[in-house]
Image (cartoon, rainbow, N blue to C red; front, side, top):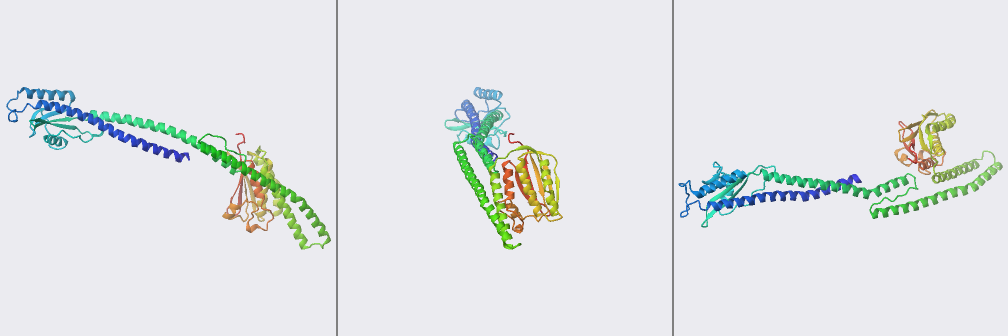
Length: 470
């Protein structure tokens, strides 16, 4: 859940930071350019005030015959000094674009582009509007023009053409500061998101682990207090109450099955004894008596299996470090005479490997599995028992060459009282594998079923190699 929740939070935080950072960066660039434009407007206004009196006072015509005119010379000196100090090209041009004074002297009004637009706008008596925004990756120059007005008429235009390198550097530095702030904010938000998701999801993980423990048979597991939001803490308390109630109900059910099985065994035993006595009074080989005797023994076996199942689900496992290979080899040797009587080869490959298991429970489970394999394996076929380990668990695999089961039947095998429709004539109560599963689950083990190609069933008994205190 954390891997899905955390990217969502990161995307949302990144979107918020970008929504704040981009307008801030644009505003910073606009503010830096506006400062430059205001400075240029002030400069052009000063040059315009000097240029007002360079033209002839009477007619307003250009004074080209007096190059030593003091005002013109003063204007030229100011423009040259301005150029030398700031590196900005500046000039005062008559309406026909002829220079009144300019610095450098070979610079004139451009014939196109922003410079010409600013010049024409100033001829109409307006100062330059804000030029187009200059971005750090652009190398445009900034052109600002102001009209020179005398007696209400525009007699000339002051034009400044500024390099934008310094301004673009300031904008870039500002953007770097904003970017660094965004990255720092993102890292801080990410750290907060990690802590928040950890705080929120910790009780969820504990609840998930406890649910898995209960689902695998460890009904004593409970959700420990793990902090988190109040809603999740209340959920943990409710889950523990539910687990207590479920355990109590299951305990009552097991107790009822055990008591009922135990109470029924005595009258059933008496009934079977009376049937035997009755059989002595009837002719030998009476089919009805034989049928009643068979059904009575079958009912006694079912009651015994029910009692074993109830005890298996109720008793705690006595876990010990056990040599699984040695124990399996003993069970294979014990079942070999049965296999020989049926004409089935029982082969065991049982290398030494240790795991944590209840020896009695594991022996009972292996007996049930091997017995089941021998029942359904035809004469002349083989039942293989193989012990292996992969570091975390040890496995005992029992493979037979019987008729096997369909996929639907594999999903139901191990259910209580379930028997395959094609094997109803085989002796059994349908509880043996259920008892095996309960015995293994009490010690943290499991049992699984799969097809054994080309035909047959493969049963895998798994026990953990990690001790209960690890």
